[in-house]
Image 1 (cartoon, helix red, strand yellow):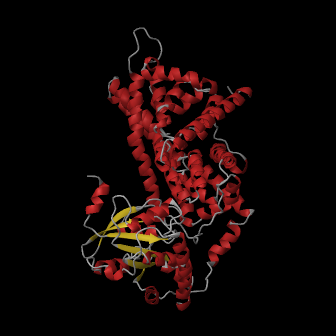
Image 2 (cartoon, rainbow, N blue to C red):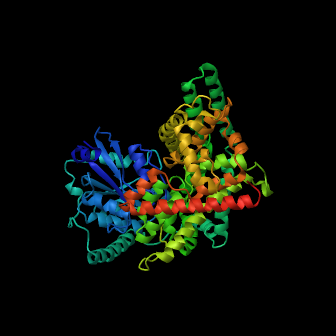
Image 3 (tube, rainbow, N blue to C red):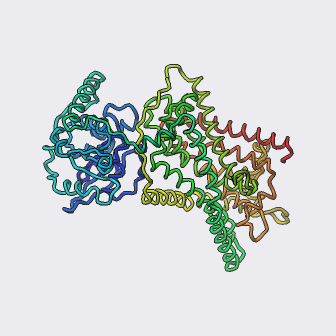
Length: 637
């Protein structure tokens, strides 16, 4: 029996967390369930509903769903559709919630209360959770929870989602509830279907009047500005100074990726060297030792070395996310993205794609405009995902000298910044072309999004998120990368060379023959047969290219230290033109199979995935060809 079907028969009550983006709903979900769901404070972070269990003081266990943030129950995007389907009981394999916790941002009641009134019309038992009351108090905003409960006709519980004891009152309330009789918390009932456009318009007008009346009765109809955030925004959102600060900030991040990672990378490399030497001494010279040293240690270890750089990059991204700066970056880039045929709302999915294209593509569900969503899906793979970072780091370490330039800038960090920038500019170029060739019925929508208050990133959230990134990376190392490394070792080791053979054994193996065949296709862009072999398993995961090269060169070399010497090996056997060509290839290279499967699921067929694969392969080959020929022209071959 599948998990989705089990939900129909679950005895635990189902509680749904409903709220606008930036109301602190996901932080509250973490506090209630102990889940390590990622916390962020920009729209679109919760693309799919998340589930956890809460054990009450009475011993009763309840299921809690963290629904995607929504501004309305009249869905305009796929994430709002998920929320509506759950609340209407139409979600596949999921029952209708027994109780809805309507989470409000105490600093933005005017917008948040409209969603509460919409939920009230559904006829579901509802409880209002007034979150972020600590921030409201610091801003001088006094909210009478009892008076608000009277105005709404439903219970109101105050919480602080980022404090360890911030949900104690809510837990106590849930523990005292009579879960067999929740009818008293239901206010009204409407038809199970979606509202018509006319009914929706009428409800908006009625809700606006009611919200204004409630705020006026509670003496909350005046706006209290967030002076600290306003002072920062005067600088960070300045039309001239703002983009300069953003550029400098990104430039600093890429410098840090190389500068800060030197010592931990050396530590990992030295540990792998020591382990390789130990295995060489302890084991006899046979196929098993070759598998361990030339296959697993060379392949998996070669990828593991780049973990520090990945964590440093994500540390900065997560810190900016936690601080509230990322939505400002979307605002700053809205005009630039508009010229390319997109709105700033595409920024968050594209930014997510720097971690991995899969969550970035899934995050496009928050884009209501069909054209914007499709183009964002098509260009998301061009954002430099973390899986490409090991490839970039390998080639930059091997061919770009560790040289300090003006203002103590590192040349390697500058090249890495240029590669990320090339992917962004390439994506904007593709979007601009699609803007001029798509139907005129699609219009670019202006960006409208809520800007959260600035706050210092919480160390606990950063630590949890970084651990999650490390865990994901290590699972890939111990999963798909290990599997592909062992497979490639087997293909590179068998069949054995014929008697009297003078070349390296790998040249007579299945992988060697395949590599020589593929090199005919890739020779015009400077790729040798070893690179051609590595590109094939690289379709499973980008990092596999590094492990594949390490395995191939370990088996191609007769040196005892070949398993730990990939950088000097390729720097001595490749030309700079070949290295630059491979860097250009990976700026546009076709995506991994998991990403292709995600695109198929999100677009409902094979048409878009095939288009994506075709145009990315064409761009990658063209960019590599031009780069290689220019490099040869300047004598870099």
